[in-house]
Image (cartoon, rainbow, N blue to C red; front, side, top):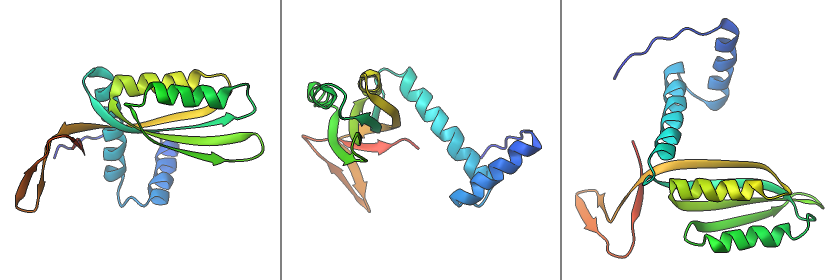
Length: 157
């Protein structure tokens, strides 16, 4: 383990301590590791064109916007190889929330998310992507399994 020392403004440190407490961290170090890990994973995915990821794309949209629901559905069908599942929630008389679970190459997932967010009438879109390593084998206790026909996606450490 490597030790890193940093200095931050006292007000920012107090606010960070509140975040740490609210989220249940037992130390600043644990919280900082998670923040650094998230940033490193995001950059890794963006730099490596062959980086695989699993992701959730959530967005709020106005379903009264002309043909927007149909355009969003067509975009999902055009990228069926990325889309694992979609959840649709009615928020009020005008707005819906959709969360799309995705898996695939990070650049393709990012491009899909950008296209969805750019649709007129889509609001508050957010992509949460986790880079993964794909493998056709995995370990169970003392056993090693190989699978043909499907891949296992394992988070990077």
